[in-house]
Image 1 (cartoon, rainbow, N blue to C red):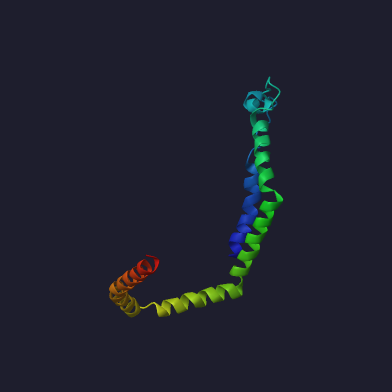
Image 2 (cartoon, rainbow, N blue to C red):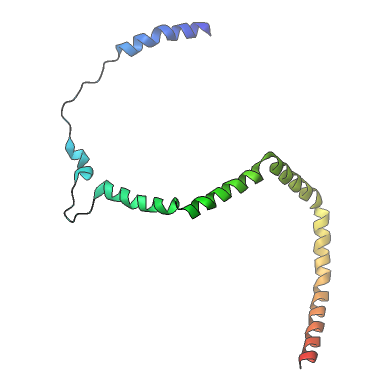
Length: 136
């Protein structure tokens, strides 16, 4: 490992000094800056500046006090939920639900609902008949 360290220490300066520097250009091509240099005749800013002003209007809405208060509330409540105690409680809740929700329990609840279906229909009919007789 030490050999590679020293090898790089000797090779790196040689390689970096052997690369030629790029030639400086004195000519600046202003045509590539066209959208930045265009002037509008109607007095409104154009190009990138006009887009920037439009974007700043949207930022004004985002930075409104109501929005900042809402963001603060969300961050504060998220911090409470995601702290160590909150994550431990969520893990315990999921573990308990996983232990309770077995295939046996699902079969029993399914059978119970099938048996209660006709009973609920009969109770609804009795209640509707009672209401009809009371209300005329």
